[in-house]
Image (cartoon, rainbow, N blue to C red):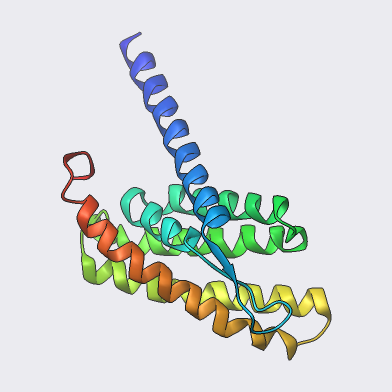
Length: 177
């Protein structure tokens, strides 16, 4: 009976932690965003990307993927970007998974600043490519999606600029060691 209680407690904690990370990504995307004046669909710059990176670096690929996919997908559903929700779900889920997988590779568990930075940078082309293809399909035009790329790059650069120092600071807190 002891193992069942421990297993159940562990699953409950994982569920609560995942839900909190999803909520943090959602709230950071919802409350701290700026629509870019690049084109009609130049995109948004928001702190949800930073929260996605932080979630992936601190808690690994699965929780990072869930936080990014569901948190930003929910934002799209309620904020007038509904057509983008499936694309966001795939793009941000994969981005969170890639960041977490690299940051947690070889037992690092997000403790290497170099690998955390590398992870965030390496995830960007995948995110940009998925949004490019998604927008190309939505608008049946393969030239128009190029206008969204600068906004995607700015958003990711801001995310990295915020996430890496925050992760360094949080790693100093005993609960994240």
